[in-house]
Length: 123
Length: 99
Length: 119
Image (cartoon, rainbow over all chains, first blue to last red):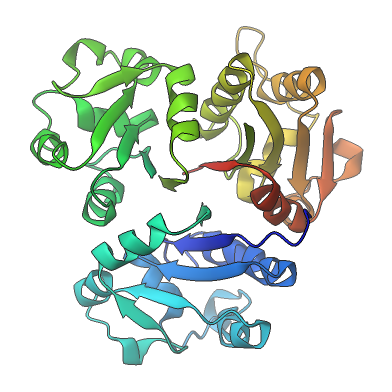
């Protein structure tokens, strides 16, 4: 890693959990990223907001429940979680349905935030 | 910044979300199945033309050609090859792939 | 400029790895350095040496390996994603190496640009 350089990384999630593996594997990247002392933020747009819908019970589909990991992100000093307002509304969800504290932003606001990033990793 | 969309706008909402999110002054590059949005007569052509006020729109020519759609390229869309794709990436500080 | 690439899909099913390859080749032709290609999710399937496409088709695995060899591109396959999908050192194609996700974050830090190809 180069000399103490801090970049702004945004991890953008737009896919629903369980139907595909992207949510889980992107969470794995975020956990590793925490060790690199970079400026990390997570954004959830479109079906990605379902990743944070509280109350996962995955017993019936025999898949590991990775939702507790989102709640552990704060322990890794990852606490900038942004959720798309329009995506929540389109899905009948609100911030109170999320399993972790989030900041609800409009698409335009997320767009502005994206402009300030050095690296955007999209899953 | 550079926005890259690789999905057909009639199959996924990637283009819609991209257009609603992208800030003025950026660029949009359509690749793979995303190039269908950049063709005349397409249902998405209207919103793509409307977006040209705030975004410069490009489409990857080899992907249009492969799909038999190169001659239908929408007016106002700049066609680029892979070298042009590289230039767009280097000319913009960040890029986002709307997968 | 130093460019890193992330590939999230496997060969043949998705165009992602073809787009990434043609992009990488064009970047090199323009005098840029492709420092690392990181294979993640099903993208790890781009690295198995058991791949045998029909003779008249492109050999996606081999052409990555060749480009990597000729231009010193670090072709890194994510270990966690690889093990899930049965990719190990014993079936890894020459030119690729298996390593951790830290290599992706590091690529993002060290490269001037990181471009993602996926589904």
